[in-house]
Length: 463
Ligand SMILES: [Zn+2]
Image 1 (cartoon, rainbow, N blue to C red):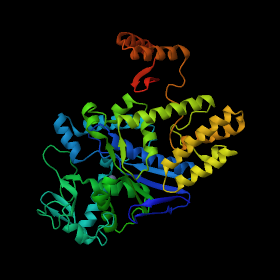
Image 2 (tube, helix red, strand yellow; image 1 turned 90 degrees about the horizontal axis):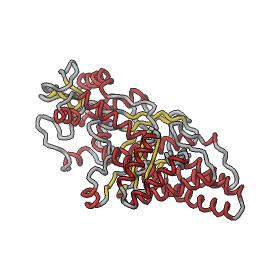
Image 3 (cartoon, rainbow, N blue to C red; image 1 turned 90 degrees about the vertical axis):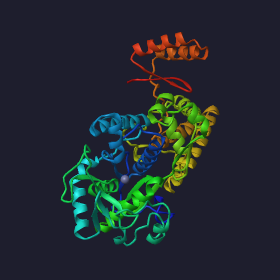
Image 4 (cartoon, rainbow, N blue to C red; image 1 turned 120 degrees about the vertical axis):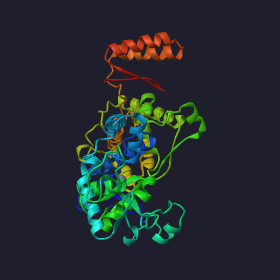
């Protein structure tokens, strides 16, 4: 039985599914107004790992994650760049998917765009106005949270104590500082849609509740996102579902945030926090391994040291994969346990790793068990027990594959001539012979490789 921490209950509990054997999950996706950063990378990796593990265990997962393509920040960016919001969205959504592919995050089953769901949002808001749950003021339509009986459930505080708190802005025309915008009236030059209550655009909280219920239906299984979305975004999504008489998600799950280590790093590597930059300067599997090595609910510290340490661990995995001639896994097709054979010590390992992952996705324990098993497999092979070693190696490969981590670096199918060029280029770089390093880079490019500089040396891959 899978167990997961529930953010509302504040405890780990059984993952009770609406339809046994099927998981319906919604992950709040990005607002595409800028380069994707490490925080985006963490939440997409965390929920990609969860999705992959549920799938590995034989569950049929329907994974929905939205693209917010209309929002204040997108409008601000379009004014700043002097381009239309559509052009801004096209640019940054393209960069988003590029980064996801580099991280090996499998594409969602559905990635709804908010602007495709505006009629359903208008319908929801109209219903609230008819029932006096929402009201109109000069800049738009607001939900009256006092009409939602258990508002504050996700915040873990009742309405009165939230009101008393200092986290809420001034009231203005609003009935309560906690009331939030469902619809924002159009300002000149902004994208807008006609509605019975005035030309405008939807509020962010309305986008997600409409798309999640629209695609997954009432009582869907799991609503996920970063801890920073718990309040007010998720509270306000849920408030609308409750106010509309719908049954919202059965479980709530939130991932911890990313800490980018120390002043030093941000000063010396100003753009290190962009995923695009990370992919250019390190093995993209390194960030997945870092994410796996911390529990998803904990904060994650990212520094050049922790990335370099993950790359050294990956080098061990690559060498292991070569030694046991393991097939490459963890591509776009998600692995399923029933398609792998677990035998002897490999079966025991699967039982052990399966138990810790089923218990609130304890990936740090799972990774530690897998690295211990790797050492055992190597010793068994050294000691002549090839069969035990191979059983363990096959299980290790399958289980890392289940978590989306390939034991093969992207340069694995390198021919001997290209491999020699890579070695010579690394030697030239160590000797600071930049002219020779550039010349060798050009030779590799002529052979059709994309060449990247990682802290471990030259990485090459096919475009
Ligand atoms: Zn959302």
